[in-house]
Length: 547
Image (tube, rainbow, N blue to C red; front, side, top):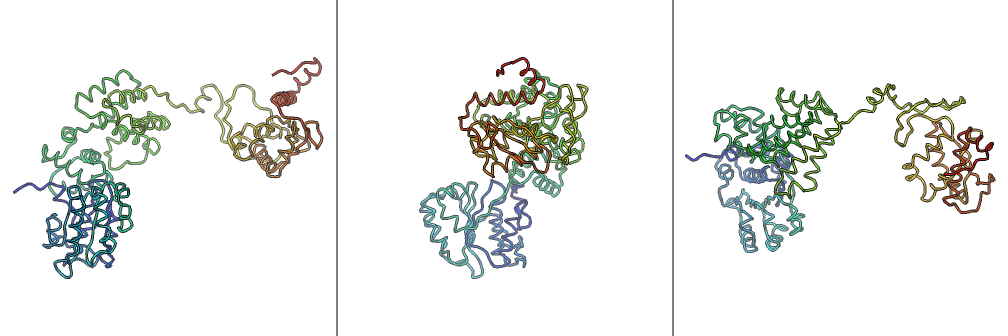
């Protein structure tokens, strides 16, 4: 008796047995139970995720004499056995659209569909696999029958490339109910593989099943086929070493080894490591994809040390957690970005010799500068830790505190200052430094007048002396409101008032043009006014101001 492959032997027979595709199986089951089955379905998704299987289960359910009230087929009667096995029958016909793609094939299908089912209570179901292979003329020949189908005739189109159908036969999409199938997760594939091995009475190692599930890349059929390969070598127990030998996957010890090399900055050892991978017959592209997954795992462990990724064994999780502790989360993010960028730009797919690409990636990671916290730098310099930003304080009549002496880190300008500023002149300078806020909130052409303004505080009001015709550009209410709100934010006050005057001090303002010289001159004057000792030296020694 010939051997039946696991992918066929354990193919689902009921809607509830289809893994991960509940959004499709449950909808179809309810449609059958409620008598609301459509006349045409388009099943889209990767290979090996259950498209043809669900089409067969739908055909079984429609033609099963012992169907349950919930719409599930029995899976055991002659009709169900015949359809599940993929055998040709009068009422359920499976067609490979890749080899029957022409207009003549479509016309023959259309003529056969016009015939009634073999029995009154049965349905005729046409399952067309690889439907994207049909020509434009073939789709046009089917268009009319899909728009006005004969009674009790169902079409199920399965495709891995729905985009091609949309390009060649977009009117078909509006005449079909479309279902998009998802890739099956690694944990779901592992669970199904474990159930199959338990039914076969074969022991297994969970890490071996994880390696097979990763290799399957989201396809249940591929996972079962790979399991068949491994069982051909070791039919008593599925172990990691058997999976590595048969499928050529990279062992976890290799990923732990390269992480140690990166942590210890052993740059020269990277070349020997890649050489050993090649000597063992590993595919470097597959190693690269596995490395990206392990970097993601390290980042997850670094951000959530108490989390348990999937069904990873405790010993292996502890080994990766130990490596994760040696990296800062920022370093892991940059390393993962390096790995992702290698595939995003397509260089790894285009090259015929990925060895150099992988070696350079590993070397860049080993030479990566480590992230250092700002607080650690301050502590090493003998300073105090940087305090958390305080909420804005209430207005106070006391003078501003004198800033501390000595060097201190200067934070980058942001939308909110690190600490409230007491005097309005200092707050005005902080507002001018917040160029991002000004660019987003003020009209174009206003900022140069602000840079050339001379600011002084008078009775709780900020007085701005604007050179040239800038006074008129700043007096519109919406401009003043933006400036006053920004100034209040940087001054730590509820509200402030701004008064605009001309450069000559009156309310009329000047009428000259604003030039680089005038802006530089007013800026120098403002700097002198902010330094009383410098202002007195200029007056007493009759000094000239130069830039």
